[in-house]
Image: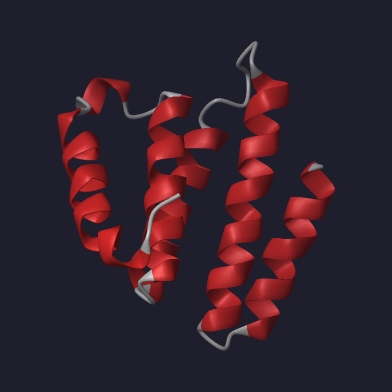
Length: 109
């Protein structure tokens, strides 16, 4: 588990990992996982605008994998990303968007 004092170095590690991934593999679902994990870290750091951006990017990546043979696992990760977006929108005070995201997460599960 990441301790509070370790959050900034952890963020730097995520930034480095994302920067290392070539643009040709950005539609790979594992790349989406990096964005979800970094978004969760941004939530802990109260960087909600950045968390929203990363979560949105993960949703786009997972949606790009709709026809994948690994779709059941991707569908769960997509649901988790929508739930995270719900948490972010709740933190931003946009309860209507939060509810939409929670409903989408529930529909996917």
